[in-house]
Image (tube, rainbow, N blue to C red; front, top):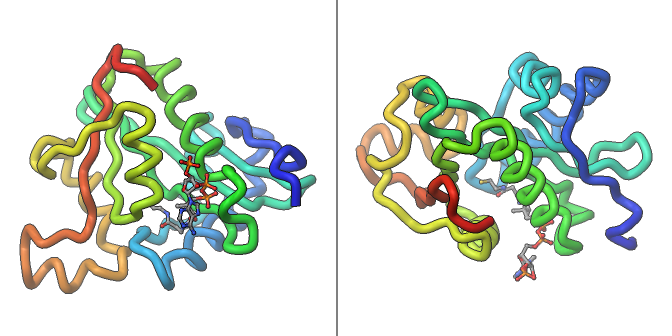
Length: 178
Ligand SMILES: CC(C)(COP(=O)(O)OP(=O)(O)OC[C@H]1O[C@@H](n2cnc3c(N)ncnc32)[C@H](O)[C@@H]1OP(=O)(O)O)[C@@H](O)C(=O)NCCC(=O)NCCS
C-alpha cells in the first residue's frame, strides 16, 4: 500500500457521516492501547466544527484524530489519534499529527498544544515536533478534559492509585517550532 494513495485532510461539515467509522476505529484501538473511547456524537461535533482530521483511502476512513479547546483557549488538546491496524507504519499517524498541529495552530495560535499519551510512537512524533514532557499538573485543569479519560482501559486502576497514569503529558508552547 502506497501512503500517497491515502488523503489526509481537515474534516468539514460534509464529513459528518464519518463519525460512526471514527468511533469504531477508536474503539478497536482502545482494546489494545491506552486510548479513550469516544461517542459518535462527540466526534460528529468535532468533524462539523473542523476540529478533526481524516485519513481517507477513497471513501474509507483509515485514520482519525481531533482537537479540543480548554480554559477559554489557553490549551488545545490533541486526542483520539488512531490509524487502522492494517495501515500502520506508513506515516499516516505522522501526517495526521501534523494536520492536527497545523489546523489547531491556525485557529488558536496563542494556545499551548498538549498531548497525553502512553504511546512511544506518539511521544516520538511529539518530540520531533518540539513538544516537551511536563508533569500532568501543567496540562489543563479543566475537569471535562480529565473526564475524557474515564473510558480509557486503565481508568479504574488509576482511580485506586491516583497519580499513576500510564500516560505522559507533553506540550508545545505558542511560537515554538512544529
Ligand atoms: C500511534 C499511531 C496513531 C501511529 O500511527 P502510524 O501511522 O503507525 O505511525 P507512523 O507510520 O506515522 O510512524 C510514526 C513513527 O513511528 C515509527 N514506527 C511506526 N511503527 C513502528 C513500529 N511498529 N515500531 C517502531 N517504530 C515504529 C515510524 O518509523 C515513525 O517514526 P519516524 O517519523 O521517525 O520515521 C498508531 O500506531 C495507532 O493507531 N496506535 C493505536 C492507537 C493509539 O495508541 N493512539 C495513540 C493515542 S494517544
